Every structure is written in C-alpha cells, then in structure tokens.
Length: 310
Image 1: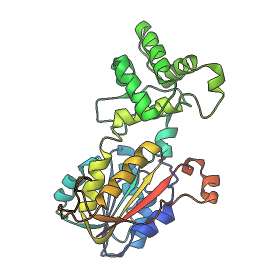
Image 2: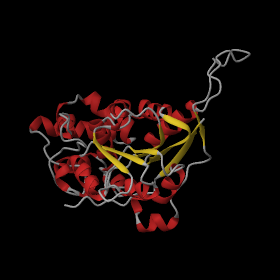
Image 3: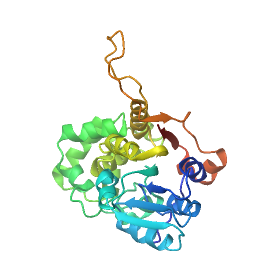
Image 4: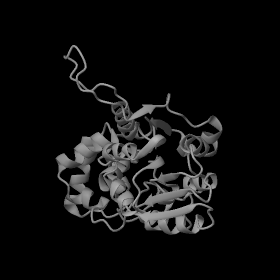
C-alpha cells in the first residue's frame, strides 16, 4: 500500500516556518513527506532539510519523494525525542525552524495490519516503530486492571473507562484478545446501547489511549519541544500541529513556560530570577479553513501553534 497522507495546515505551517531559503529546517514527523516536500520547495540549493520518522515505510517513501529536491536533504530513521542526539551526529548546533505534525498519518490508520484502526480487523499492534517491543497486544493483555483504567481515563478521556476495563479483564481471562475486531466487540459490550449511539465510534477513545501508551506519545513531547526551541537560531520558528486536547495542552503550556520572563515563586514581591524567555508565542492557534475540513475531515481538530526564538 502506498504511503498516502494529506498534510493538514500545509500552507499555513510552511509559511510560518520558513524565514531563510538558505537555512536549516527540521520536519520531525516526515510521514508521507507532505510537509517536507513543501519545505524543500521553498529552500535554495544552500538550504538543508532534515526529516525524521520512526516508521520505516515513511523513511522509504520520504527518500523517494524528496530525491529531486534542490536543497540538501537528510532523512533520519529515529524517534524525534532523540532530536539533540540527531543534530549532534550531524554536527549541527542550531537550525532555523522545527516543525512537529503530531497527527497519525492516514497510511497508518488505513493500513489494517498496523492495528491502529477500530474500523478494520487486524492483529493488535499500534507500534509506530516496528522495532520496539511494546505493542497494544501486550498492553491489553498484560497490564493490570488499574493500569488499563488509568490509561483509558487519562489518554482517552473515556467516561466508560472502568466498565470497559472490567469487560477487557473478563474477556482476556478466558483467552487473549488478539485482534482489533475482538477488542472492538468487547468495548461495544461494555458501553450501554444508548451511549453507543451518541458521539463518535465507541472504540475511538480507547484506541487513542492505547496508541498513546504504546508509542509514549505524550511523555516525550515537553522535553522535545524544549530541546527544539533551544536549538533555534534567533528569529527561528517552532511550529507545532496538534490534533487532540491532550497533546495541545502540553504544547500550549510548554510554549507559555518558554515565553515567561519571570519564573520566581509568586509570593516574592520582586523578580530575582533574571530569567530570559526562550521564545515569543506568535498569536492565537491557527485553525484549518472550512474548505480544508470539508475536503479532509481528519483536519477538523487540528491546531497550529507558532513560537519565535528570541
């Protein structure tokens, strides 16, 4: 299956990101190379694009789609949480812009065997990087009832979390839950019929929670955003596209903290910390236009946050 993905807020993010056509830019989430291709098109032969992804299919696709770029292109198979180590290995100290598109690609969602989708039956997997050991199968079948409940409450914000976990534990006591279809059936049994008819697919929040846990999606964000901001040249841009409230909350709070002039305890009458802000937050989040949402419903929840290195 070809790696097909429609990049969200493409023009808006690239317009915000590029300040120097001969600069060094990082796309931390290569995916189907939509953003990377648009960035490369804006750079001159002196420019340098570094594209990172932990998915081997994205790496292969990106290398193919970027091979005609005029600028220098470096494609890195790694997790963006290792941003500092990646730049050190390339002997690059500072860059002119860093982009994070935190959405799961259409390819990953639509490729049944990856196990991300509640709409297609497949082995429980959900690993962005197939090299890692932890999979959704292990989380569903090996985590304790308390651990599972916390994940689905915290990462899925699912009101029926405890009931869903009770049904999961009952089912796996008989035999392991091996496929997405089996898990969806358990979730549907757990949620009352009236609630199933309301809102999104009944398994959506649970699957989101499992995906976040398997890939540690939230745990790596703050430290990586901070590392990216510190690597920017003065006037460089940090652009973050989020797709749900949990990751957007982390992005918003991290940027606000990096923009603070004072970090003294509030009870102190005067500032003594001599802290200097790392970034300036550039206005309110940018949202997709109605036309983009109509053509790509997955863009509906997207937000673009932009910060300037100061």
